[in-house]
Length: 201
Image 1 (tube, rainbow, N blue to C red):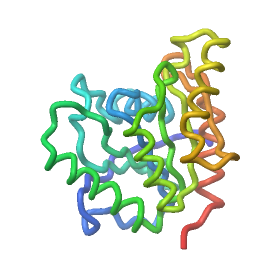
Image 2 (image 1 turned 135 degrees about the vertical axis):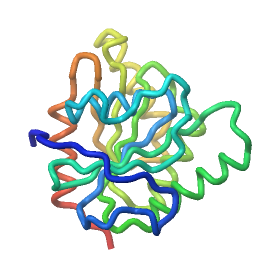
Image 3 (image 1 turned 180 degrees about the horizontal axis):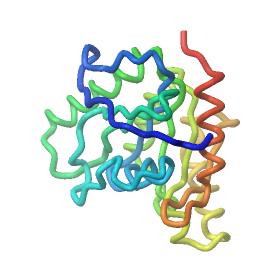
Image 4 (image 1 turned 60 degrees about the horizontal axis):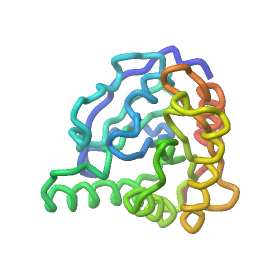
């Protein structure tokens, strides 16, 4: 699918603030410095659609974007941020868990992992939430342009082994670079497939 329009809809914390488009939603999740904003901008071809913050963890809202008026991308707030009070972390968890469990329009979670870093406890906790919500999962290894092809494959295998207990064996994964565009067509194809064909009870 070629993206012709990508527009901000709204930001939300609570259920009653979610948009009522009725369109299928695909949510993007990852640590606060994993390159999530850059990936969404790269996918949509809109450099300024999602603001790339110099302060990881600054965004703590669910941000909804209409894509071609056919689906909605949801930019979930990054996790794993440092120097944030426990009360804010708890409220973040409540917000994300509510969205994952209750949003009938949600068709898939695109979980980002930095190819250069081993998945940590925050990543595993997020994957547990996704599994509990029974939502199709796609893993995206970001910043692959930083490593050689041999090293990226080794790191990907090690990461998949580390999170094996948290994901299904047939979980699809993609190498992605917002800098070079590698993986863009492959990921977009998967997103369209899940948005059109998957359904939540």
